[in-house]
Every structure is written in C-alpha cells, then in structure tokens.
Length: 302
Image 1 (cartoon, one colour):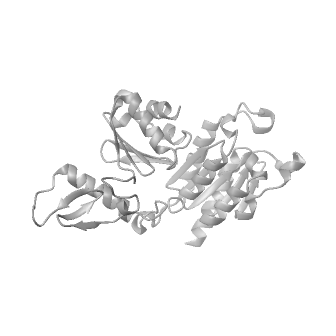
Image 2 (cartoon, rainbow, N blue to C red):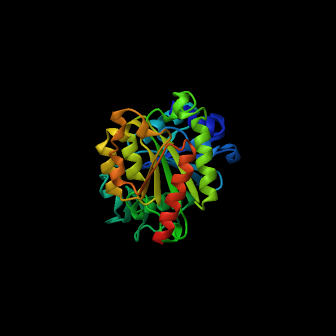
Image 3 (cartoon, rainbow, N blue to C red):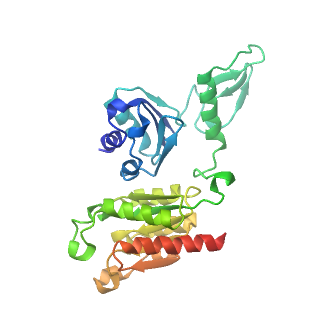
C-alpha cells in the first residue's frame, strides 16, 4: 500500500504531525524530519518527486488522479486530519475561478476567504499569511510545475523512468537481466548522476502505461531530460511515444538486455522515434551510459 510505504519512509506514523494536500502534492509536517528517507520515498510507486518543505516538512508530488486517495489514507493511518487545498469548489467558487483573484464589496476574496477589506481592515495573522502564500503559488505557478528562471539556471535534473516488471530486477530471468536489484539500479543512477553533474536524478517505475504517460507529462518544466526503459511497452505503446513528442524533453532509450538478439516481436521500438539515442545490451551500466549521453546533449544545447 502506497500510504504505508510512505509512512515507513517518513519514520513511522507517529512522526507525522500534520497532513495537507494541494493540487498534486501531499505536504506533511514531521516531528523529527531527520528520520525521513528521501531515497525510499522517491522509489515508491506513483511518487513523481519529493523535496523538503520548510524546516520540518516534506512535499511529495503524485499524479492528480491519486493524490487525494493517498492523502486520505495517510490521514487515516496517522489519525491526523487532512487539510485539503485542492482546486475544488470552495464556498461556491469553481475550480477555474479559484485560480483567480475576485473582488467583492468587502475587499479581496481568494478561494472564498476575505483577506483585505477597506471597510473592515485587520492585521493578517500567520495562518492567513501562510494560506495566502499557498494560494498565490497556485495562481502564479506555470502549467506543469515549471521551474522559475532563477531555479532552473545552471542546474540539470534527469528523470529515469522504468516500465513494467523492472521492479523485479534480480528475480526476473537473471540469466538475461542479471542479479542486481531495482534498488541497486536506483543507487547506480543517482551516484552516476552526481558524477556527471546532475543536481537531481529522480527514478520512478510503473507497471501501468497511463502512469508512465502521466510521469512524462508531469516532467515538463521540472526535468531537463529523461532516461527511459519502457520495457515491454517499448514494442507496443504509441501513447508513450506521443507523450514524449508532446513534451519535447530530450530522452535516451535504454535496455538492459541485448534486444536485437531476442524475439522478433522485440525488434520494434515505438519510443525510439522520440529519442536522441538508444543504449542496448550493457546491463545496468547502460543507464550510466545513457545519463552520460543525456548530460552531454543538454550541455551542448546551453
């Protein structure tokens, strides 16, 4: 269960002091933030990214279709109330209108809450200010969670996507895929990424085509490049190909096994039409090679 895995990686349910939700993000305040294991959180199915939030908080990004269910599950397991700031109708304001400032006779009204009123001036308290900052971030944040120019300048971030059954590395046909685990692959990618100058290498894996499409779409504006092993979807998924073309993020295709020497049906790759390079048959080290190609390509463009 995703929520239980998340709580384990956060240091247990007792370590979570509050749970809130906004758009695609689950935000948790921790009694002991040093207990949070970011690597374990990032490896959880459906987690797109994770980062610290403030002095004692953690922000975990999920797809919009799943964040509410996971948030409710976490709240139930911790016994903490779920504070939701998703873009749903609030005090009669629609999701579209909730992203805009509206003026009424009492002053500025955002998401149904009055902050400033010429007729009734008052001092904003800390809770008001926190809520206002949150709402303004929803209004001003570029579509797809794009980084600001200041944040993106000079940094390199890569997303490593693995398709179906790659979570079973070490167990799945070890004569073909080797005996190293998926956790070993995550460690290898992150260490190689640091050596190659990436500020972040995020690794995700899914057995579901739609999740991979969502991850590619959500990567726009957050990641500079993608390394992808679509696994079986390599040979079947036009949807993944279309997603890569749509976001236009440089992508390197990688495969652990020597695909050209395998079955006939594995000789077709749809995703290759949207990739800048392909690395085949180098085992897990092929991911290092793919990251190297990606890093060189991205720096050449700058």
